[in-house]
Amino acid sequence: MNKVLAQGEVEIEIPFHDIDSMGIAWHGHYVKYLELARTAMLDGIDYDVQAMRDSGYAWPVIELHVRYAQPLKYRQKIRVVAELVEVEHRMKVNYRVFDIASGRRLTRAHTVQVALELDSGEMLFASPPALTRRVAAGAGD
Amino acid sequence: MNKVLAQGEVEIEIPFHDIDSMGIAWHGHYVKYLELARTAMLDGIDYDVQAMRDSGYAWPVIELHVRYAQPLKYRQKIRVVAELVEVEHRMKVNYRVFDIASGRRLTRAHTVQVALELDSGEMLFASPPALTRRVAAGAGD
Amino acid sequence: MNKVLAQGEVEIEIPFHDIDSMGIAWHGHYVKYLELARTAMLDGIDYDVQAMRDSGYAWPVIELHVRYAQPLKYRQKIRVVAELVEVEHRMKVNYRVFDIASGRRLTRAHTVQVALELDSGEMLFASPPALTRRVAAGAGD
Amino acid sequence: MNKVLAQGEVEIEIPFHDIDSMGIAWHGHYVKYLELARTAMLDGIDYDVQAMRDSGYAWPVIELHVRYAQPLKYRQKIRVVAELVEVEHRMKVNYRVFDIASGRRLTRAHTVQVALELDSGEMLFASPPALTRRVAAGAGD
Image (cartoon, rainbow over all chains, first blue to last red; front, side, top):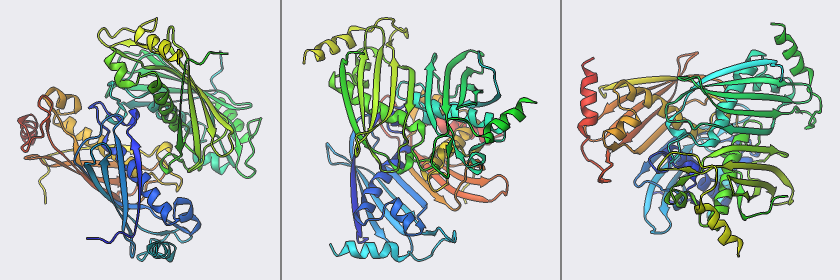
């Protein structure tokens, strides 16, 4: 079991333009839903994309994994929860998507990101203090 | 009737992820199709987005107009033709979308872009030579 | 000046995945923002996409016009207001996009939709009671 | 090592509207690239989305995994190769994304889909002959 280092969540209503011809949200659109929850999580440790850039790093996603258990329908209301579970060498975030009405879990996912130093263009094999310091600060909450 | 200053076109097969729950391409996706044809047209005058940036300008779209006459179906093959029709004060491009199988015209559209000087952040009310020179050179073809 | 027959609005925070390489929301993404406001407006007269289908009609968009006055930045908060201004022969909706912080209007747009009878596949040149009755009922509010 | 039961590929030029503010293709857009290659692969065994539906099944994606090794830039030309490697109980497809200019592999991915019987709405735990027969026929090529 991973210790949760930071957490964030969003509520989303599935829009018409995400529904495919089978009447469910096209599986690729989930990547947006995950990103919105991750953004909420990163807000909690003051490290959104702009702050990342200001700190001298980008954090490209190097791995994405989604396990879809139940489809999403038009106008279904979901809660997406993002949990930061690793920061030492990479930023790993776990996600769960819940149906708000029933509380049922519909989808699980995770992403992995690594620090890319903007000046040098180099990937880092240990996360910079710009991240770990923020997580340590948040952990004291 | 506008004189055509430059022309470009692309062929596209409508992908599954652009089809909505009514079984037709969602109207917002056409903006991508137009952009692909505009890119082909701009290639013909050596002025793609990277060349724009190198020339010191961005060209934000300030107006978009689409008139949809016939819907697009899954895997339908279309030809999108872009024609540059104004360059003096702004870049106006007209588009026509054709069904390849029948030759029938399905959609008309136009976009208007203006030059934004990257250094100053100022909009220009006359197009810079970076564009007009290229069009003049191309017109000699 | 058009009489406003129904109105709806949404608040949106511009997400990372809508930002292009120039640092602004790509112009094609606005079509989603307009649709969300139109959905809110249609909710007010009980006529969302599912209700449309149940009533025997689809309402394809036959015209889209957007006039962009100011770009949108990452995480900018906007309010999108949709107003139904015509229903007799077609459904015309006007949109205004405002920056929430300043109240400034950033973009104007309109869409036109027509009724398509699902059984026959025929376009109607007069809007069916399924729409006009709802608008009349709402107008009595 | 999985035996490859069917194969398909597409060439794609990364469009402007897929590039994010870091100057690379946003990671969520890859799902479209994979789908285009899978469609090409399914064409080879006469089983595109329309044929799936005609056969009485949908094939929702229940798992998506992408491992990004190198970012994609604006106008980079890529080849996406899809290989069908499992059909007995589910449809598993492996993907590799190559830079066309250098031949370098940039990304690996896989998806898993299962048969959903349209009449009953039931998931099947063994793939229907509609798929396995086509694969067997193709394997004789």
